[in-house]
Image (cartoon, rainbow, N blue to C red):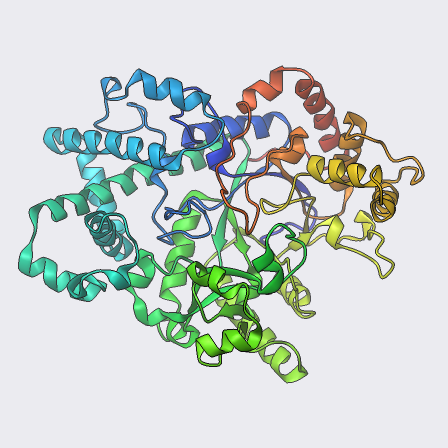
Length: 564
């Protein structure tokens, strides 16, 4: 059983990049995750949920990785004891001081500095050939099926000035097979060295993250990773295996009003730019690409979340790339069709408007997910099933034994009241917010501000609904996000029957730090204001967390005697 029938747990959700620790060079890293593991163990939190840690592109989004397997080097801990070949003198003291003080992540600077340190370590490592040399060579052999293509792509990406748009590269390197032919003929020494360097970087990353996994198990905490449905169209996977991916469409999500800050999302939807899959070709290869992706994920994590599981059933797709969104924003549907040869965004392979299409979509998704689950053993798998959810998806996930999400603000009765948390099924993940949503402190402050404004009737009704959900007097909602209100919201979540009560780190601490806002400008740059150790020790957070720990125990979600 992936999800034990009698088990109920607490999960803490956070992006690695947002963590802090002294000497972290301006971004969260693998060592900071160890601190987060200690934090979880102290407060009875049994799962630490992380966003994807795969290598990102220029937008720094963990959901637009340039590799489905390669790890993001900026999240590595770069200290001498963690990186063979690195010495303390390699790290300027100013970098350590500046990084710890930064309130937001300066990705270009962080990535360049960490790359510099890794290059110094690699040069010394190759020169000295220490005992770890044999381990590095063994890693290269074991991971050759993906590492050879990735390392060449990464070396060529650097050669091309960091522009990942391989369809604009010279013809001889525009795809993996042609690049191999060119490489054998030219054998450019510097490129071969760079290829080995990028393999070395991944070896460092896998060593660190596997040690994090071991440490978590020793502390009785399990790590939950995240496998996004899509990958970057300009990444090593598509470049290496182009027949598997349909780059004529860009996957995304249909229009919705929830993200009111973005006019494009309201009108056209979210255009993520991800390629679609030629599923028949994946099936012909016995899903080798997916099997490898899952296997490498489970080397590091004890389970994983499938992001946008709806994509396995049907995917909303755009006939233009995200960089063209601004051109299409003002157009009518007829004008857009004129630019795209008659094509408009729509669901592929079909919408669920008629029963026959819906039945085919359901069967397709169940088949694909069933094949993927064959590779997971007893690892826990959960699914992000939010957005426009077809009626058949949640029953299908239940049949497969995969918990979906229950977010109170989205779980409503016909009169718009919140469904009671006691109605959530055991096979579910209850949470107030994912990384895409505002923290509960932001939501409540916004409701109160609207309530006390000139036209606050709708906000007043929503506050009444929330108070009823919490079991409080709907006539007297607090005028601020008080500690008592905060703890009550956490208690109701913990008391739900759901297998997991997942809490965004901002919601646990009651702060307004937000990590992603779909459609907004600069995302993924936020850091927690302080290291987690600060919140354990300093009022009022220390008192809050001291009150939270008994709530975990009283809810029956306390830690088990065995580790992960």
